Length: 309
Image (cartoon, rainbow, N blue to C red; front, side):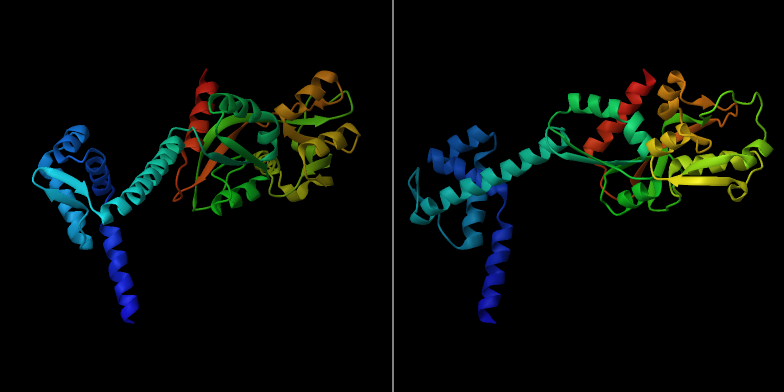
């Protein structure tokens, strides 16, 4: 018990040693002159003397011989000098790391995005980010909207970018981009007019539940008076590409991002059904209480800059 008490006292004394005391001690030890050290560090001589006296008193040891106007290191001072230099160097290195991190010269950015965004909308922004901040390591994961929200909530990602609205009180969500869903089919010609009855009778190829594409489609269909349960669903597939390929093979109709179907529409392998589903938003999500990383903030600024230009 006595040993433990002595250890705690020594530990408390060690914590009381400040980096400023170390800096002043090193300056005096290197110059063997208090006044010269004070001038070099742009502090008063009395401040230097007070700091050294406090350091010696805290640890009950003499670091300097003071003979007349001269000052020399004691044995304890000579042993302490390399340790003091090492501690100050480590503290400087630690500060440098934080400065590099805040200055985007070091660090990592973990982004999770839903499929349409990760494959078609986000890459140009990531390329621009990489060019502007080449030292930042980018880690991009692809999940559907529900899984992306979970990753941000659990701290697995710094930033999420999703297609659907997220109902989670732990997450902040705001619009970041926009897109349009297009209903497509493989067979031509398409009907000149499409009503609710035609949409109910059609055979649908759908994304999986939890995807932003499916949630947005169902939201628009409700506005047309169609509930999801009324639809005839022939296939449910886990990616935009598998849905598009199935529709091209004649499995039915489906709704996909205009970014996904644009090449197929130009090539004539798909045809747009004349039913406007309106504009949908892409949302950024982050945890309300977690630290907002400088890299994530920089990516958001870059997206806003390029979208505005």
